[in-house]
Every structure is written in C-alpha cells, then in structure tokens.
Image 1 (cartoon, rainbow, N blue to C red):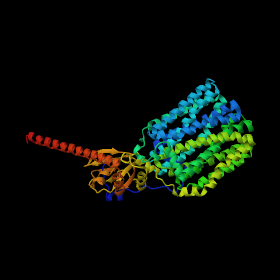
Image 2 (cartoon, one colour; image 1 turned 60 degrees about the vertical axis):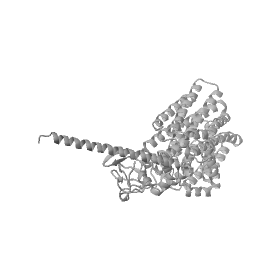
Image 3 (spheres, rainbow, N blue to C red; image 1 turned 45 degrees about the vertical axis):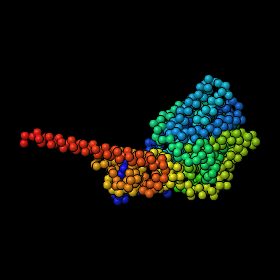
Image 4 (cartoon, rainbow, N blue to C red; image 1 turned 90 degrees about the horizontal axis):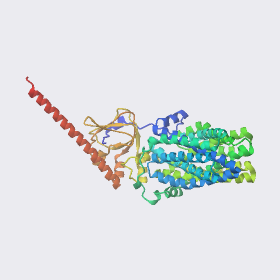
Length: 590
C-alpha cells in the first residue's frame, strides 16, 4: 500500500545498527536464531536430520563389517554413496523449482520412510543384497536437506547477521549430533541390532518433518522468468556457475575434499575400534562421538564467526589443527590419545565447515544457491565414497597408521596451494544474499533477472523505526520505496485504517511511479525492520522490465481502487449521518 517519505523520514527512521567487527557470544548467537521462529524450526529439524544421518550411517557400517570385515564395509559404503553423489544435484535442481519449504519437508518424509524400510528388512533378516539395496534409499534421501536448507535460510533470515548466526548454529548442531548420534547408535547396538538404530532414526526424521510442515509455504518457488539463459536453468546451472567462477570452484573443492578424509575416518572408526584397539563394534560409535565432541567444544570459536567479515584466518587455522591431529592419530596413541586427537580433529572440522559454507553462500549466485549446494552435496558424497574406498586400501598397504597420515594430508595440501586465492575470496565475498532473498520473495521483483536483483539488493538501506513511527505520511512527497523484512505496519488513509502489512509486503510505489504525493500514511505497529530503496533505483528496475512494470501497474491500480472505494464508503456514511441528523431535527417538537 502507498505511503510517503518526506523530511519526517530523516527524523523518525534511523539506520539499523550493525554488528560487523564485533565478536558474538554463544548465548547471543543462540538468541539471534531463537528470535526468528521460522529459523528456529529449521534448526531443530536439522538436528533430527543430523542424528538420523550419522546414526544410520554408522549402523550400516557396523552391519557391513559384520558381513565381511573392513573390506566389505569400505566397498558397501562406496556403493551406497554412488547414487547419492549422482542424484544430489538433480534433487536440488528439482526442489528449487518448488517452494523451498515443501522441498525440505519432502526430504524429511523421504528420510523417515526409507529408514523405516531398512529397519523392516533388518528385523526380517533379509538377504544382505536386498538390505544394501534398501540402504541406498536413506543415502539419497539425506542429500536433500543441506542444499535446500542453504537456499531456504536466506529467505527466512531478516538480516545478514541472522543468516551468519543460523549457519554457525547449523555447524554446532552437526558437531553435537556427531557426538550424540553415535552414542545413541552405540547404545542401541549394544542392546540390539542395526535394525533398531534404523527404526529409531526413522522416528526421529518423522519428527523433523512435523517441525518443517508449518513452513512448507513460507516462501514461494523461484520464478522461471528470473533465468535469462540456459546457464541458469536445470542441473547444469550450478555446474556451469562453479566451473566459470574460480572462487566458488575453490570453496567447493575444499568442502568436498574434507569429505574424503571424513569418509575414510568413518571406516577407520570401525577398524580402530575392532582391529586395533580390540574393543568391539560399539566403540566405533564412541570414537565417532569423540570427533563430534570436538565440534561441541569448538562452539566458542565458531560463535565468533558471526561478527567477522573476514573468514580466511579461521579457515587456515582449522586446516593446520586438522593436520596436526591426524599426524598424532597416525601414531596410534591408544584409547585415551585417540579420543583426545579425534576431539581436536572434530573441532577443526566444525570451524572449517562453518567458515567454508558461509563463504560459499556469499560468493554463489543467489538464484543458484540450491543448485550450487546440491552440486556440493553430490561432490561430498563422492568424497565420502572415495574416502571409504581409500581407507581399506591404505590399511592393507600400511595399516591404520598410513591411513591416518595420508587422509590427514589432503586438506592442508589443497589449502597451501590455494592460500592466495582464499585471501582474495575473503576480501570480495560480499554478495547480499539476505536482501536478494527478500526481494525474490516479493512478487513485485520476482520476475527480475539475477544481476538486476543483486544490483537492487546492494542499493537497499536497512532502517529500523521504533513502534508508532510514521514511516511515510499522507500528502508528503515520495522518494523511497520500502520492503518489510520483519514486523507489521498499518496503512492509514484519511484517518482510517486500510490494511496491515507484514514481512514480504511493500509500500511506497504509487508516488514513485505516478509522481504524485503520498496517498496514505504508514505507521509501525511495533519494532520493525525495513529495507528502503531510493526512487531512481526503483524506477530503473521496474520500468526496465516489461513483466515487472505490468505487475507494478496492476498493483498500483488495485490499491488506488481500494482507496477510492474506502473514500466512497466514507462519503456515504457521512451523507447518511447528515440525513439522519436532518430528519431528527425535523421530527423534534422544539
């Protein structure tokens, strides 16, 4: 609905304070996410996803090891990951053409269903080949969550700070799940068989689906008209972008390479527990839990990433710590030493993953986020497969010591070779993903091309007026357009309430498009977060795109008609009141 901005705006609407350059505490980061109910639901569901993924994967490895030792465990893990690696980018591309909330919900439902099917097969003592075939289902289903969530979160976040905070909390959840899920899996394996683990994780993923269900229509699907060429359409869009962008290519390579080491480590947990330490299959879960415990300990470190604009230093630091931990594991220091070094490696991995994913989210083309992260998910599954196959080969060649030393050298070598480019990424990774996601969810801008959206997003100015502020006033001249990022505002014309607008709605377009004075007043109901766009930038974007111009004109006509109808009703009410008063005087005996 229309409103105006004149001199009052400079007095009443102050720019929001930013936190860049300030370190964030753990409680503050959690508070940032908790205040956004939608992001909180996503993170709680993400916890169920991580528990399901880690526990079911460990149960599968223990089952395979029981069938044929470390060789079968590694081969089966590789075979499980092949369909996941191939289908992850495809699934992400399909999901992007639908509302991201629905795609995320479909992933959780698929995870719960496929885990349940594996549990039935295991309890029924089905043949190993049948069981392995069913295990491919969860492997593929679990690839749906991270890419979709990476594209969903910017649209739910109300500020760049919230997006960074939710990335950090996601890292914490992954680390905590790496600790908790293997412990749960180990306890269930000690009580029963891998079938119980799959059954329990199916129920956990179903809980995730219930958490996501209310958000299934929180954001619309991307508009097909946003893609101007074939490079932005289909599965190939993400591949083409990563191939053409050296910064994205390096980050994807680093994030995928870590999975070679983690894939090998998954197999080495079982070998270390049973083949070296002779502690039994349940201890594979406890060793894995130590890796997750390190990530939990690193919470204080990753919390500080929320206030940082430069992430190359923590990325490099984590690579160094990772290398040192694996060199120590190569010495096979015994149970206590292995637990301690795995914890150190887990902390390094958590810091590396949060920093790397946040940088990738900054450099990736916003309209291709789901597909870029889908490609990453596929490459990470490939990395897991390579690591799972590499581990038994290295163990056969030189034992567990050689395996730990070799996989521990992968990431530091890549990091050293690309150190200068990492610093360059750190200096230039400034894509305003939150602002772009907000504009994309606004129908007025949905048809604009990605470059135009990014240009508009960079021109937005964040303002946070207090409750009761008249952001624009009827009768003033208009020079700004507003999009609501959070909170509610009231639209008032001629002293009467017309409507209430909330997140994703916008106002101020009539005065800008028709060069007239503001036709209504817009007043904040409570604390709100707005993004303002200057007149010239707004008009260039809207008038330069046929579909956007037509849509804007339709919106303006509809809103003007609403105001005319409101004024007509008001005139009728005034006339009726005057007539009633006249009749009352005529009927009066005095």
